[in-house]
Length: 514
Image (cartoon, rainbow, N blue to C red):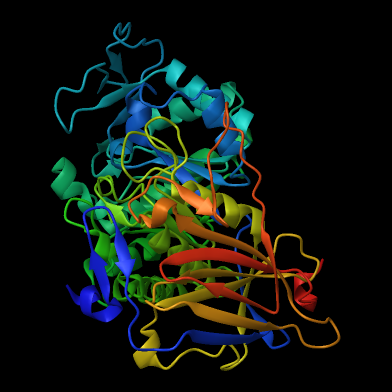
């Protein structure tokens, strides 16, 4: 119960409420005349996934033709859509097959069954399944990243026959594919599939994939991403050794899209609400990112260093935490992960998942937006790809004993790119915090447009959130409500256990102007 003492937070069955510790209200100051660019990320920085198990289930749990799903997806573009996950290394493309009526039981001597005989049996996907995906990609405008099955192997090497057949079919349908992955979380293969692939072999498999793509005109310039390592906890971990060996075998130009790793904070089956508020858990992400970057920079030199992708992530793995991962409380770890990743120079963050029947979707099982969806939507609309940081100690932080990193803010240029700056973040402290903004020069008092998010009825387990006190709900067909800010002058206050975005339109920051 460490957060009980740290935050003076009391837990009830439905609520977490704060009781003020004996401190005055807290204050921060930010001089917008003293900033620098920390990083520039991909304009599709916030991206999302559809798990490959949905494809293997013939899209029965996610209707890709649903107008509401299409509309809500469009609102989050530009973005990559990753189709991948554990099941991708079970999927077999079965041309000529129909669900429940397989006309061709053998494809290149590979099994092609329409039922899952066991956890590790091959899973058929049909022409219809791929058509559905292709149509969804075209109508929503997302940039598809498709994960191929690397466990079809012969003689210790990847057997690409079925994947090539799939790629040729996608080419025939004129499905745009921005990038490809090969295998998902290879270090988990022994546990999940009772199979293993050595790092060096996987690197050579990736080189082969690049060669094969060069022979398909439509995809000859599409990117390759990998290797989706996970469980990075500390220096010297097996995942980092695997990554280093894999990169040694990859040609310099193979990973043109980026190096990918996956990150979750804890297991969804054991997590509690307090875990979602624990800043010590949140702070681990930057360390993990730096460990991966160190491996990548050891292998590559400028200008050949590939981008770094957080290729699959949420807060809790294993499908998320029931009645937590899709509630307001999960927004804290999600928004903080976006802020930390961008500040650390991660090019793209892929949220697991957009939709599906698991707990960590941005859309729930009925395609209703969770609070995390609205956080993502505001991020898309307000936060640009240009990441800022204050010079020196300009952004005055509180004494560590009082703050304990519970007040967490990040800075970017805003999306208008007319000199404006957006501050986003959260207050996990028990006291409100006041932030004073100085624009510098002759711009006058800071003009601040506030988008403050709080849980409905102050219930952190609520399925709904409010924007400046107004509940956010979508209309028929996925129509987004108006996101109306509150205008502030010079300063804004952030209540305990809330988060938000604050756009300073008259910041007049030169590198935030086109």
